[in-house]
Length: 270
Image 1: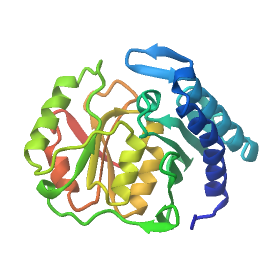
Image 2 (image 1 turned 135 degrees about the horizontal axis):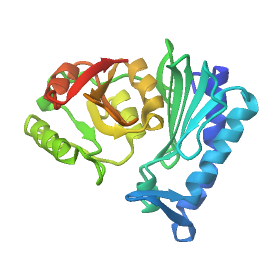
Image 3 (image 1 turned 180 degrees about the vertical axis):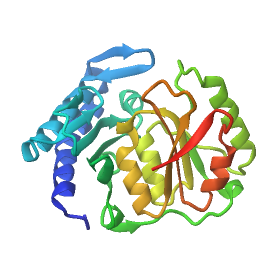
Image 4 (image 1 turned 90 degrees about the vertical axis):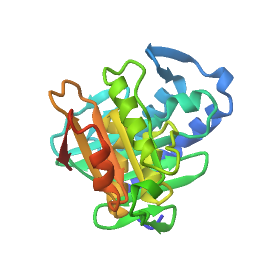
Protein backbone atom coordinates (compact mmCIF):
# COMPACT_ATOMS: atom_id res chain seq x y z
CA UNK A 1 0.00 0.00 0.00
CA UNK A 2 1.10 3.58 -0.65
CA UNK A 3 -0.17 4.68 2.77
CA UNK A 4 1.90 3.33 5.64
CA UNK A 5 1.17 5.36 8.77
CA UNK A 6 1.02 3.45 12.09
CA UNK A 7 -2.80 3.53 12.11
CA UNK A 8 -3.11 2.30 8.53
CA UNK A 9 -0.55 -0.43 9.18
CA UNK A 10 -2.34 -1.80 12.23
CA UNK A 11 -5.70 -1.76 10.43
CA UNK A 12 -4.10 -3.55 7.48
CA UNK A 13 -2.62 -6.25 9.73
CA UNK A 14 -5.98 -6.73 11.47
CA UNK A 15 -7.75 -7.11 8.11
CA UNK A 16 -5.21 -9.60 6.81
CA UNK A 17 -5.37 -11.71 9.95
CA UNK A 18 -9.17 -11.75 10.12
CA UNK A 19 -9.58 -12.41 6.40
CA UNK A 20 -7.81 -15.79 6.63
CA UNK A 21 -10.60 -17.23 8.76
CA UNK A 22 -13.29 -15.52 6.69
CA UNK A 23 -12.05 -17.01 3.44
CA UNK A 24 -11.80 -20.43 5.04
CA UNK A 25 -15.34 -20.21 6.43
CA UNK A 26 -16.69 -18.82 3.16
CA UNK A 27 -15.49 -22.00 1.47
CA UNK A 28 -17.24 -24.18 4.04
CA UNK A 29 -20.62 -22.47 4.42
CA UNK A 30 -22.49 -25.65 5.29
CA UNK A 31 -20.42 -25.95 8.48
CA UNK A 32 -21.12 -22.45 9.76
CA UNK A 33 -23.11 -22.17 12.95
CA UNK A 34 -25.72 -19.53 12.32
CA UNK A 35 -28.15 -18.09 14.85
CA UNK A 36 -30.87 -15.52 14.36
CA UNK A 37 -30.32 -12.34 16.33
CA UNK A 38 -33.35 -10.58 14.91
CA UNK A 39 -35.69 -10.63 11.92
CA UNK A 40 -33.71 -10.44 8.73
CA UNK A 41 -30.45 -9.92 10.61
CA UNK A 42 -28.22 -13.00 10.91
CA UNK A 43 -25.21 -13.50 13.06
CA UNK A 44 -22.62 -16.07 12.03
CA UNK A 45 -19.84 -17.74 13.92
CA UNK A 46 -17.53 -16.30 11.29
CA UNK A 47 -18.73 -12.76 12.12
CA UNK A 48 -17.90 -13.20 15.79
CA UNK A 49 -14.53 -14.79 15.04
CA UNK A 50 -13.53 -12.00 12.65
CA UNK A 51 -14.55 -9.33 15.13
CA UNK A 52 -12.55 -10.95 17.93
CA UNK A 53 -9.40 -11.16 15.79
CA UNK A 54 -9.67 -7.53 14.65
CA UNK A 55 -10.29 -6.11 18.13
CA UNK A 56 -7.45 -8.13 19.64
CA UNK A 57 -5.08 -6.81 16.99
CA UNK A 58 -6.19 -3.18 17.40
CA UNK A 59 -6.21 -3.14 21.20
CA UNK A 60 -2.84 -4.89 21.39
CA UNK A 61 -1.25 -1.82 19.85
CA UNK A 62 -3.62 0.82 21.25
CA UNK A 63 -5.08 -0.52 24.53
CA UNK A 64 -6.51 2.83 25.63
CA UNK A 65 -8.52 3.50 22.48
CA UNK A 66 -12.26 2.96 22.39
CA UNK A 67 -13.72 0.38 20.01
CA UNK A 68 -17.18 0.62 18.49
CA UNK A 69 -18.12 -2.69 16.92
CA UNK A 70 -21.24 -4.35 15.57
CA UNK A 71 -21.56 -7.14 18.13
CA UNK A 72 -19.80 -5.80 21.23
CA UNK A 73 -21.04 -2.22 21.10
CA UNK A 74 -18.54 0.27 22.53
CA UNK A 75 -15.69 -0.75 24.80
CA UNK A 76 -13.19 1.43 26.72
CA UNK A 77 -15.10 4.60 25.75
CA UNK A 78 -12.15 6.91 25.16
CA UNK A 79 -13.34 10.44 24.52
CA UNK A 80 -10.74 11.21 21.86
CA UNK A 81 -9.69 8.05 20.01
CA UNK A 82 -11.93 5.34 18.62
CA UNK A 83 -11.80 2.39 16.24
CA UNK A 84 -15.01 1.65 14.32
CA UNK A 85 -15.20 -1.98 13.22
CA UNK A 86 -17.51 -3.97 10.97
CA UNK A 87 -16.08 -7.51 10.82
CA UNK A 88 -18.29 -8.59 7.90
CA UNK A 89 -20.22 -5.92 6.05
CA UNK A 90 -22.55 -7.95 3.86
CA UNK A 91 -23.28 -10.80 6.26
CA UNK A 92 -26.31 -12.04 4.32
CA UNK A 93 -24.24 -12.21 1.14
CA UNK A 94 -21.53 -14.07 3.03
CA UNK A 95 -23.92 -16.62 4.51
CA UNK A 96 -25.45 -17.34 1.11
CA UNK A 97 -22.16 -17.80 -0.69
CA UNK A 98 -22.34 -14.47 -2.54
CA UNK A 99 -18.81 -13.02 -2.88
CA UNK A 100 -19.77 -9.43 -2.05
CA UNK A 101 -18.71 -8.60 1.51
CA UNK A 102 -15.91 -6.74 3.23
CA UNK A 103 -14.07 -5.95 6.44
CA UNK A 104 -14.37 -2.27 7.35
CA UNK A 105 -12.21 -0.49 9.95
CA UNK A 106 -11.94 3.24 10.62
CA UNK A 107 -10.03 5.37 13.09
CA UNK A 108 -11.79 8.39 14.56
CA UNK A 109 -10.12 11.21 16.50
CA UNK A 110 -12.32 13.66 18.38
CA UNK A 111 -15.38 12.55 16.37
CA UNK A 112 -13.69 12.97 12.98
CA UNK A 113 -12.76 9.98 10.83
CA UNK A 114 -9.05 10.30 10.11
CA UNK A 115 -8.33 7.12 8.17
CA UNK A 116 -9.98 3.89 7.13
CA UNK A 117 -9.67 0.59 5.30
CA UNK A 118 -12.26 -1.46 3.44
CA UNK A 119 -10.94 -4.89 2.47
CA UNK A 120 -12.66 -7.21 0.00
CA UNK A 121 -10.98 -10.56 0.76
CA UNK A 122 -12.47 -12.36 -2.25
CA UNK A 123 -11.23 -9.87 -4.85
CA UNK A 124 -8.16 -9.03 -2.74
CA UNK A 125 -8.97 -5.32 -3.04
CA UNK A 126 -7.83 -2.98 -0.29
CA UNK A 127 -9.39 0.48 -0.29
CA UNK A 128 -7.74 2.87 2.13
CA UNK A 129 -7.50 6.57 2.84
CA UNK A 130 -6.01 8.97 5.32
CA UNK A 131 -6.97 12.59 5.84
CA UNK A 132 -5.02 14.84 3.50
CA UNK A 133 -3.17 11.96 1.83
CA UNK A 134 -5.72 10.70 -0.69
CA UNK A 135 -7.48 7.40 -1.33
CA UNK A 136 -5.99 4.24 -2.77
CA UNK A 137 -7.07 0.91 -4.18
CA UNK A 138 -4.17 -1.43 -3.46
CA UNK A 139 -1.20 0.64 -4.72
CA UNK A 140 -3.05 2.95 -7.10
CA UNK A 141 -4.47 6.38 -6.31
CA UNK A 142 -8.23 6.51 -6.91
CA UNK A 143 -10.63 9.33 -7.68
CA UNK A 144 -14.36 9.60 -8.08
CA UNK A 145 -15.95 9.68 -11.53
CA UNK A 146 -16.59 12.85 -13.50
CA UNK A 147 -20.22 12.24 -14.48
CA UNK A 148 -22.12 15.52 -14.34
CA UNK A 149 -25.73 14.49 -14.94
CA UNK A 150 -27.88 12.20 -12.82
CA UNK A 151 -29.54 10.66 -15.86
CA UNK A 152 -26.17 9.36 -17.10
CA UNK A 153 -24.99 8.10 -13.71
CA UNK A 154 -24.70 4.64 -12.23
CA UNK A 155 -26.26 4.74 -8.77
CA UNK A 156 -26.29 2.13 -6.03
CA UNK A 157 -28.46 1.77 -2.93
CA UNK A 158 -29.59 -0.87 -0.48
CA UNK A 159 -33.33 -0.41 -0.24
CA UNK A 160 -35.30 -0.55 3.03
CA UNK A 161 -34.98 -3.06 5.84
CA UNK A 162 -38.00 -5.34 5.89
CA UNK A 163 -39.22 -3.93 9.23
CA UNK A 164 -38.48 -0.28 8.43
CA UNK A 165 -41.18 2.20 9.38
CA UNK A 166 -40.11 4.22 6.33
CA UNK A 167 -40.40 1.33 3.88
CA UNK A 168 -43.08 2.89 1.68
CA UNK A 169 -41.29 6.26 1.55
CA UNK A 170 -38.02 4.54 0.63
CA UNK A 171 -39.69 2.59 -2.18
CA UNK A 172 -41.38 5.75 -3.47
CA UNK A 173 -38.05 7.55 -3.41
CA UNK A 174 -36.36 4.68 -5.26
CA UNK A 175 -39.07 4.80 -7.92
CA UNK A 176 -38.75 8.58 -8.34
CA UNK A 177 -34.96 8.46 -8.70
CA UNK A 178 -35.17 5.48 -11.09
CA UNK A 179 -37.30 7.54 -13.47
CA UNK A 180 -34.52 10.15 -13.67
CA UNK A 181 -31.76 7.68 -14.57
CA UNK A 182 -31.13 6.01 -17.92
CA UNK A 183 -29.19 3.21 -16.22
CA UNK A 184 -30.94 0.86 -13.74
CA UNK A 185 -30.01 1.40 -10.10
CA UNK A 186 -27.76 -1.27 -8.60
CA UNK A 187 -28.18 -3.13 -5.29
CA UNK A 188 -25.31 -5.25 -3.97
CA UNK A 189 -25.85 -5.64 -0.22
CA UNK A 190 -22.63 -4.19 1.24
CA UNK A 191 -22.65 -0.51 2.20
CA UNK A 192 -18.89 -0.27 2.68
CA UNK A 193 -18.14 -1.73 -0.76
CA UNK A 194 -20.79 0.49 -2.34
CA UNK A 195 -19.02 3.55 -0.94
CA UNK A 196 -15.60 2.21 -1.91
CA UNK A 197 -16.85 1.73 -5.47
CA UNK A 198 -18.07 5.34 -5.54
CA UNK A 199 -14.59 6.39 -4.44
CA UNK A 200 -12.88 4.59 -7.31
CA UNK A 201 -15.38 5.73 -9.94
CA UNK A 202 -17.19 2.44 -10.59
CA UNK A 203 -20.38 4.03 -9.28
CA UNK A 204 -21.26 7.71 -9.46
CA UNK A 205 -23.47 7.94 -6.40
CA UNK A 206 -24.82 6.02 -3.43
CA UNK A 207 -27.61 6.65 -0.97
CA UNK A 208 -29.04 4.50 1.78
CA UNK A 209 -31.41 4.80 4.70
CA UNK A 210 -31.04 3.41 8.20
CA UNK A 211 -27.40 2.36 8.32
CA UNK A 212 -25.20 1.81 11.34
CA UNK A 213 -22.11 3.97 11.78
CA UNK A 214 -19.77 0.99 11.46
CA UNK A 215 -21.25 0.27 8.02
CA UNK A 216 -19.97 3.51 6.53
CA UNK A 217 -17.29 5.07 8.80
CA UNK A 218 -14.34 3.93 6.67
CA UNK A 219 -16.27 4.72 3.50
CA UNK A 220 -16.67 8.35 4.56
CA UNK A 221 -12.95 9.14 4.53
CA UNK A 222 -12.30 7.01 1.45
CA UNK A 223 -14.95 8.81 -0.63
CA UNK A 224 -13.95 12.26 0.62
CA UNK A 225 -10.24 11.73 0.01
CA UNK A 226 -11.08 10.52 -3.51
CA UNK A 227 -12.73 13.87 -4.22
CA UNK A 228 -16.33 12.94 -3.47
CA UNK A 229 -18.98 14.40 -1.18
CA UNK A 230 -20.62 12.65 1.77
CA UNK A 231 -23.62 13.94 3.70
CA UNK A 232 -25.76 12.52 6.46
CA UNK A 233 -29.45 13.03 5.81
CA UNK A 234 -31.34 13.04 9.09
CA UNK A 235 -35.05 12.58 9.60
CA UNK A 236 -37.04 15.26 11.33
CA UNK A 237 -37.94 14.00 14.81
CA UNK A 238 -35.30 11.30 14.47
CA UNK A 239 -35.68 8.73 17.24
CA UNK A 240 -33.07 6.07 16.36
CA UNK A 241 -29.31 5.84 16.00
CA UNK A 242 -29.55 4.80 12.36
CA UNK A 243 -27.94 7.00 9.70
CA UNK A 244 -29.13 7.98 6.24
CA UNK A 245 -26.24 8.58 3.85
CA UNK A 246 -25.62 10.10 0.44
CA UNK A 247 -22.16 9.77 -1.15
CA UNK A 248 -21.39 10.95 -4.67
CA UNK A 249 -18.69 12.06 -7.09
CA UNK A 250 -19.59 15.67 -6.09
CA UNK A 251 -20.76 16.56 -9.63
CA UNK A 252 -24.22 14.98 -9.20
CA UNK A 253 -24.47 15.56 -5.46
CA UNK A 254 -26.99 18.40 -5.40
CA UNK A 255 -29.12 16.84 -8.14
CA UNK A 256 -29.36 13.52 -6.30
CA UNK A 257 -29.86 15.25 -2.97
CA UNK A 258 -32.78 17.25 -4.36
CA UNK A 259 -34.40 14.00 -5.51
CA UNK A 260 -34.53 12.55 -1.99
CA UNK A 261 -37.55 12.82 0.29
CA UNK A 262 -37.13 16.47 1.23
CA UNK A 263 -40.41 16.71 3.06
CA UNK A 264 -39.25 14.43 5.85
CA UNK A 265 -35.51 14.97 5.73
CA UNK A 266 -33.08 17.73 6.57
CA UNK A 267 -29.45 17.87 5.47
CA UNK A 268 -26.57 17.94 7.92
CA UNK A 269 -23.04 18.38 6.61
CA UNK A 270 -20.18 16.26 7.89
